[in-house]
Length: 388
Image 1 (cartoon, helix red, strand yellow):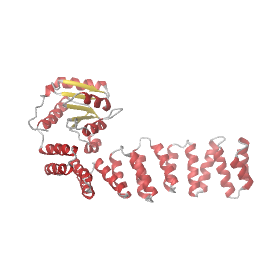
Image 2: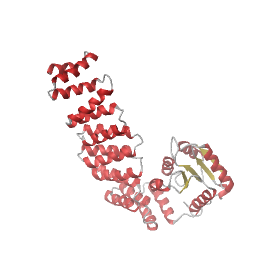
Image 3: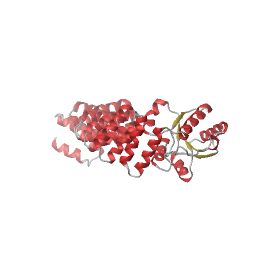
Image 4: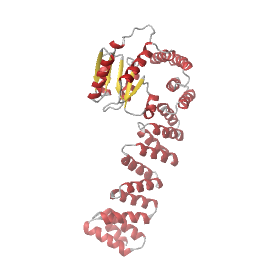
């Protein structure tokens, strides 16, 4: 960005307002009118619509809501920063969340400023003036950062690294710039230096989630699964955006025999997931597929405590205990199902099998008779009766 570039006055700014609530869009418009800020205002209801508006016309500033359907504010901002034609446009994010809850997202995205709801005239006025003043009078750090971006777009990675170094001379603890340095070194094949840069980024900003993601991906490529898992444990404490990736890494860890870190990751994914019951079922199945029964036993008992009337879960618990060799617990769960679910043939069959294995032939035969009265052609029941 050139220092002698001319900029519109505050009252002439073109501003895009993106919010899914019409009342909020109208409120911001009214506040801007009262502040005499903005000569041209446009509106969009979500991030996807906002990007379409930005492609049609140039804006001096965007005010974007954090939480929106279709595409939220962070996803929209990521697309803005990836587009060379849009990336230097200042963005103010509006959120109802407490500052401590969004700091990790701020660490991984280039927000020029953010405002907490409910908005006030004073806060909006101050934030816009501060952001636009930085645009009018960019710091040396910003100038070098922008030049590094332009060089990177041209494929001049070594030259871009030199500009990043100059930017870091002004802000040595800028985690996003340390991350950029790391990614540029990846592009020129200097992976060890890239790793050091990313490690420094998370050292100076413990909540820099995206740098941890890049580090974890690097360790995955090197098949250093435990290191990748360690970073994803931290990532999951900061953000729910990476649950699926963490789940996959947990599965890989389990397959490779790293039981403890796998279970730690699975536990965190379940805690952080909005659909934790479905995720818990997936974890149980994956663990059983790979010979791990202790953790599924814990999870299934937890599920039963939460929903003692769910007899599908109770039957599944019986199967887990049966697989682990605990016939007594398995029998207790199957009997529970049999008492409460009329005609549950699978539960009756498992009870008959356990009774048969325990040499309680008459009782086993009684359960087989119950099954065959309900389903005379039940093949497993017929076969088991032949062995009694």
